[in-house]
Structure formats: C-alpha cells, structure tokens
Length: 370
Image 1 (spheres, rainbow, N blue to C red):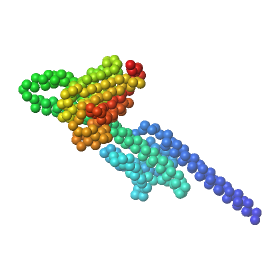
Image 2: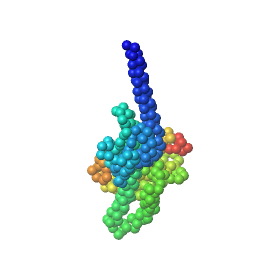
Image 3: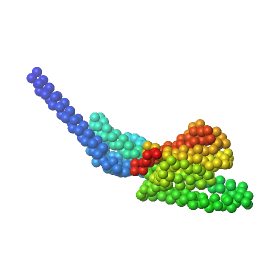
Image 4: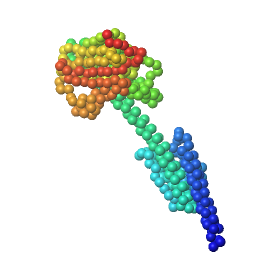
C-alpha cells in the first residue's frame, strides 16, 4: 500500500516527460514550417528542394528524390539516403509543361514523430507546387498579353491589306482615261500607307525588345507625342478612298496623345474599310459627315455613314459573329478605344449608321464646350 503513491508519482513523471517530448517536437516542427515559409519568394522553383534540405532533415526527412519535366527539359535530383523501393511518393503537377515526381524517406521511430515529419513535408510540397504554379501562370499571362498584342497587329495588317485590295480592284477595273486620276490618288495616299506600314514594322521588330504600355497593345514610347485630330480623321478616310466632311464646334487643332490617337486610328480604319467595301455606301455620291466636340473633359464624335447595302446587324460588336471576314474587326475597334478609357457604339440613323466615339482627354488638355 505504501508503494502506491510512489507508483502514481512515477506514472505522472513519465506522462509529463512524454508530454514535454511531444511539445518539444511540435515546437521544432513549427519552427521548421516557419523556416520553409521564410525562404526567398523569388527563388527559382527548381532550387527549392536543395534550399529546403536543412529544414527537412531537421524535421526527420532522411532522403529526398525528385524527377520529372520542366517546360520540355528532364529534371532530377536527390539528397540524403540512397533511393529505396519502399519510399513514399507524390506527384506535383503545375499545368501540362511542369510535372515532378517526389519521393522521400523518414527516420521517425514512432507514429507521432512520423506524422509531424510528414506535416513539414506536406508544407514543403504544397509550397513548392505553388512556386511552380506561379511560374507557369506568369508564362500564361505573358502568352495572353502577346496574343492580345498580335490580335491588334493582325487587325492593322488586315486593314492595310484591304486598302491594297481595294486599290488593286479599282486599278484593274479602270479605263485608260481613269488611270491618271487613280494614280494621283495613289500618290496622295502613298505617304499615309507608308506611315502605317512603317508603324507595323516598328511594332513587330520591337516586340521582343520593348515594353508594352497595355493600351491597345501599343509599344511603350519614350516621351509624349501628340497627333492633330482633324488630320488623323481625314487621313483615315483618304486611305480608304472616301470623302469626308469634318465638323468641329471648337478649335480644330486639338492634339490627341499618342496612345489615344493610335486607338482612334485603329477604330476609324476598321469603320472606313467596311464602308469602302460596301457597294452602296461607296458610291453614295456625297461625303461622310464627322462631327466632334469636347464635353466634360472627353472628346466625343459622331460619324454618319450613307445607307449600307445590308441592314446594320444586331450585336454588331460581338466577336466571331460576322458570317464574312474575321468577325473580330468591330470588336477590336471598340476594344482598342476601351483600352485607353474610351468607347465605341453604333446605331441605325435616318440616313445610315451613326458611329459614336468617346475618348478621355488628359487633365491638362481639358476644354469646355462653347
């Protein structure tokens, strides 16, 4: 009977030591997890296993092996104990281009120690996977941006090709008496076409060496540039072979910043090329009417077209809807304006289609309507 208190004390001491051991191991695991999460975020994902090695070994991982594919290249590595058939494994996949097979061995003697070691390994694996996904997502974003830019270039090249096609069609159908007039028009339009072609060449050549402003897929330019509004609108109409009456309720020498000017030029190119291809509107016999005004810090314009040979379609700006052409022209024309804070809309009017254009002006360039 006298030994019972001592037995209880011994049991209590054993439980206390066991609890202390579990607490101490838990503290070590918590420190290991904190050290894993503190590793540099900008480190290349393939360096992650080697940099995490001291932390994993402290947590009880005796060996680690990884092998797989990284953007088409075979990758592999190993540290610690020699690889054995009984090692546990896990597959880390970050998209179709990145897949790593991970295997490991631990030296834990108890289930509790093994569970804590695996908790650290799980944090390691999930953090490594997140680093891999960050890299693959960055690649996906870059590809999406490049595709966005290339869509704009394709749109611009298509507009230029349409101008060449229309010109070739007119020259092919012209009589000898009409050729001098067409030659004079070509001579007048040649500098405009050359400027467009040079702009496309500069953009494509600078695609790998320039940063993009994100405004309509345009290359970032050094220093502010400005373009005369009336000259821009008239040049776009001239290039399509259309006559246009420009109406301006204020100072007609308004200068547009380069980004807005290029976005407006792209939109007008699409509108005018579509009008030039329409057999009824092209031979309407009277010029297009274009009116512009500055209101509340925004440039607002309307373009009145003649009647078209086909009715104006519903949801005309919806992409891939047109049965002819690429189905992206009007969508990209509107998108280019929206990328710089503007917009484009259209509706049927009494004399034809009315296109409405809106562009924001810089604060320093704001004017009040007269």
